[in-house]
Length: 198
Image 1 (cartoon, rainbow, N blue to C red):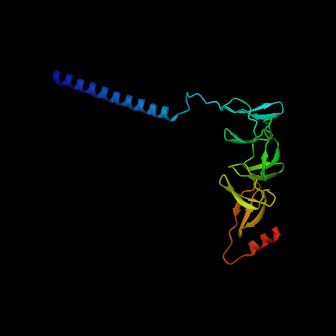
Image 2: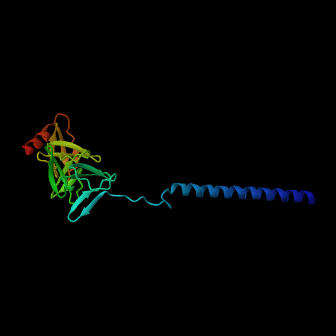
Image 3: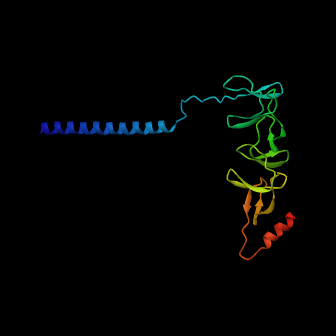
């Protein structure tokens, strides 16, 4: 009898230890999963180094390969932003609209060339994201998942309706277009929009 009781006691102890070990393994594995999903924890942030420097009231581009101010005219890219060196002194065009090879560009006061849809003065405009060229011709463009209608002269249509390539649109306060559905056989919406444009 005592032998059976001691055997049962040993079996119960082994089962208890096994269950405890399994529970411990589960808890540890769960905490490892949580630790793995937090990738930013403890990682030092990489500082963003800019090669555009300000000296006095002008901005300049310091060439990372030579460490000197670049003095030949042309476009440069720094940290995903576009700049234009306008003269042999190395000064960057800033706070104005300028022309390069008959193409128009706009640079903020920081020297960054405007791209995509942006506000300039009281109106909104669009410059190509690839090279910063300001679009002044009438057309519909896409930017960050939305469409915009550029009027002749370059300003984006806002709080109004328009028709482009026989498709009627409505523009909200930000200039984002929504296509106006036309019931079959009803052209009155397009006609009214066309009259307003004339």
